[in-house]
Image 1 (tube, one colour):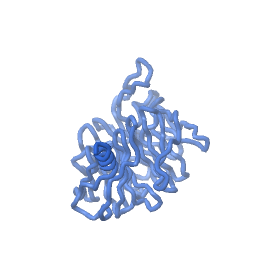
Image 2: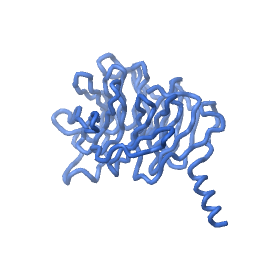
Image 3: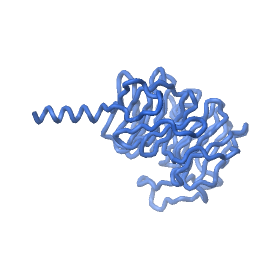
Length: 295
């Protein structure tokens, strides 16, 4: 009897019904499935062109890959302390690698190639999350979370915790300088709107993207901050703050989804892009949706 109870507890911990309710975003009778566990802290999910999702265990300096049929496997150990990641139009995995305060990409040999480091002659605070537009421009957040792997004496050196734009020709500009702690970031697939979360102020803002990468028309979007963010084909924005909060393009809350662990980041994966993939502390979870992601 004791073994039976333990077995049932394990099954319950790995598959639970989604706690939600207002909309039909989630597939009927969908279950939250624990895709993996036992990590130090999962982050940075990014969907590849083939639908596989790559995510990080940053304290362990590893990147894993999730396949909807094969499950999770180790992809790389020694990642430059990758955090937020995103695939560009060339199929390259671009990473916020804060071991050396860099933005870089992994080549065909899984070697991290630096794209940019520093601003105004000083190192960045620690790139955290990023979004890449269809034209190849990169917007990334640069808060400050002190890391135990930094050398002694390393400190916050930028005068603000900003958001930066790296143009396709390698020119970097600071486009946001009035946040307390910028973190999650995502843009619309047409490259016209950018959402950025101030996690410390517990607010997410909406901006119009200008042709040269600057941002205008700062507008309050949601009364929630967010660690990671994603967007679906209907323009709904998914925030992670204790649970997954879904807001429609008007900034109206339309869904709340609870997971066994507090989500840190989120994206859509699978060949049909209809699987919500959530990194949550020591685990990773999936949930089948009626909507599809757009990355």
